[in-house]
Length: 420
Ligand SMILES: Cc1cc2nc3c(=O)[nH]c(=O)nc-3n(C[C@H](O)[C@H](O)[C@H](O)COP(=O)(O)OP(=O)(O)OC[C@H]3O[C@@H](n4cnc5c(N)ncnc54)[C@H](O)[C@@H]3O)c2cc1C
Image 1 (cartoon, protein in one colour):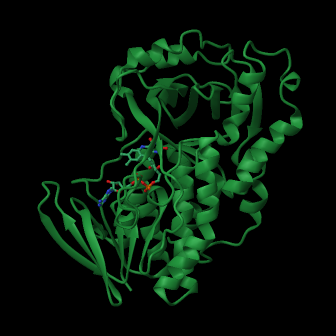
Image 2: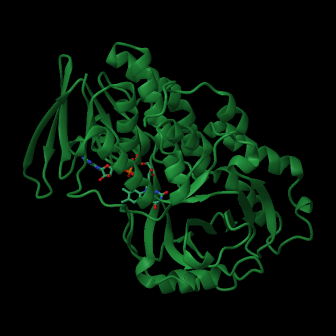
Image 3: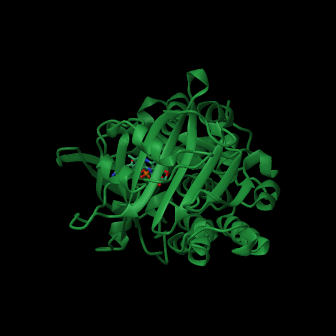
């Protein structure tokens, strides 16, 4: 049975590697003329690193990124609200890795070329339409100029085509992305390490927030720091949908004046970022949907559950989707049943994550601290009890399936030796 994977992003490429591991042939089709390593920082939680290690990629990823040691939350005055160890430091058997999305994509693509061959990924093929015909799915593509680029036939079609998925649109015609009126400026800049040298810091509150983490070591002891700055869209701006359009760096930097703390000069870091490395992306997601699997067609990654970038989940959950899908194909012979099994294992938790992230997920303690103590506090426990802090952190991880106990003790999704 041949699987057509639409989309060569993180979910599509990691699914292709999982299918190769279980001996199911597949081909990936992507709309872009050439797959180049794009994006700034992305976080891979231990639940995803466990799966990528089972694909033989753990060491490469750790070497290309930064093995994250801690997550720390601060209010806008730079006062510590909560800190927790991450990855191995928290007792996981696998690390958390902060990495440039481009590097992650490059590593996945190189493994595909090595294991599946160079023609396993076909670029310049935008899915325009598909239909189920008996035991086959036929997909039609267009080239970058919009001209027909032929058809592909498979036993299953997987929509791994991101937040603006054409596969999802086929089943949910006219469904719109939800834009909350805020955007993220984001940038990447070389700088001295801060805190542990491998800390992810989230500062501020719901409507004015910054997220920072190092993603790569640089010569001379420096690191590349990835940052996101969440802010209301300037009045009169058109609604945004695309990732990574050019941004007005000065407008961003101006909003973070005074965010200079003993542990990090956030304003200075933003100001030092070269203007061409400051981009913007809208804070968009989509409403949860009741079904991902329809006969021999299913959705994974952002096509299935696009969520606001809170709690560093999208990349990790995309990897886990592909593993659960591969495990279902191993467990059940009938393709439609296997796709339904995959959906039923994942959909409730991911729909819950979409809503949790709209409510700030584990970052909600920042908002609570702001509401209770906008001028700061003498001690955090005057504002938030230890129980509230611990409960918020643990309940999010449990819901997302990456609490220490679950990750360390659950059975492997795909119980096979790592390739290579
Ligand atoms: C260019 C880009 C940069 C990003 N940068 C970051 C980042 O820096 N940090 C971060 O946390 N997340 C980033 N993301 C999002 C992140 O990759 C996803 O949230 C997450 O990893 C889930 O991945 P995905 O494979 O489901 O979707 P995506 O990574 O969005 O991949 C979807 C793929 O589908 C292709 N595609 C879309 N429509 C069609 C079609 N009709 N036919 C064929 N192919 C199609 C796209 O070209 C893309 O390659 C980025 C996404 C993109 C596309």
